[in-house]
Image (cartoon, rainbow, N blue to C red; front, side, top):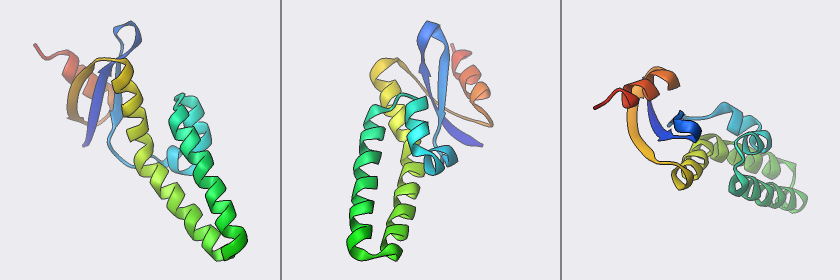
Length: 113
């Protein structure tokens, strides 16, 4: 079971975002940010990757690999938070639901009186 934050998106369609580690955000943060139009996340990723590259040239390859892994972990944990932040600014918040998948979470919140 996973905790989902549910927002009322475009055309009254519910959007549920899981509060868990996101492998796509960790492994492919650039594409994850573009797909979800998370411009702030993309800007943070560019700054952090530039910093890792700069530290790598001065600190060595081992430091660059370790910092790169930390950056990947950061985006894996915080990628969904960037998405929730964007949705919270644009759409009404319906609440949180504990469910097995996104559809079940959205359905449980939409069926409440």
